[in-house]
Amino acid sequence: MLNFEWQRAVIKVGSALIAPDGTQCSAKYLLAIARFITESRLQGKQVVLVSSGSVAAGRANVATRHAPSIAEKQAMAAIGQTRMMANWARFFDFPCAQILLTYDDLHNRTRYVNIQNTLRELLAREALPIVNENDSVAVNELKVGDNDNLAAYTALVSQADTLIICSDIDGLFTADPRKNPDATLIEEVETITPEIFKLAGGAGSSVGTGGMKTKLEAAEKCSKSGIQTLIVNGRKGDVFDALLAGKVKGTLFRSGQTQDNARARWLKHTLKTAGEIHVDDGARKAITERGASLLPSGIIEVKGGFKPGEAVNIVFDGGNIAKGLSLYSSDDLSAIKGLRSDKIEQAIGYTYGEAVVHRDDMVLVFSK
Image (cartoon, rainbow, N blue to C red; front, top):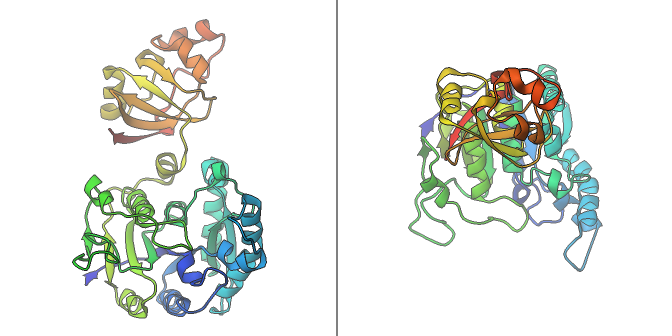
């Protein structure tokens, strides 16, 4: 088994562990996880819990003979969320704190900072933050959609050094171990490549919404931001005994060498882009080699409709090189593209400054 060290971890526990039968909360698999959380805290470490299960826990009270509607699922979540929280709280003699998030909360910089401050204060007060998506009000376009990625966002916003994803299999395998008896466990992944993503199958459980693909997405977000990620089997108590001893019984995804600052993490992983700004080679070099802001003179094309302050991808030769907040709307940029900065006010009647995307509001991404 591999060795690992950590100080602040986000632990994600899915619906298949919370409500194994799909209709109500159970302690069956949670005792070992709760003991791990308690023992880790006694060692001076900090834990944030991301817990699924609200919809499953409330399903019995909103019985349907058909596929439940969005409103019915939201009702299930509203009823089940209190049961899920109570199910966790009974294991601990310290306070548990409920935090319900939507994608929109993470998208808005002010709310993102407020979430960060709340988590920091709760940890300082030795409470256990328990995070879930606000399924009782969120609609599809405002949802993260799965708690693996929500856990990654929580690791980013809480500035954790480790994400532990509790699954119902032992980790990442060379093939689906439920279908292929020759599949072998991959104990360590240095870099998440397209070949690694090809190993991900479909959803693993009829209770939850995530499969191995979403777990790899979460691991990729974290590893690129200096956060190590573990996928372990949450049904096996000895897994948590090993973790308490600093051993990984599962798959460990190593963290990258660089640790993004909090704002860069938010820009890179959380913001949804509203359009694209295509740039010439001079702008590409200025941005990627000199850390410069994007000026209108380097813009050759604008795609999509966006307002000032919205996020955009900065594209060169068909590949994203950066992501940032545009100071100007798409209509403004179409009018000033290719112009020198001192011509902006003459072209559109006003100016927000010489930069289109300031370097402080930009993060490099380098994806093709």
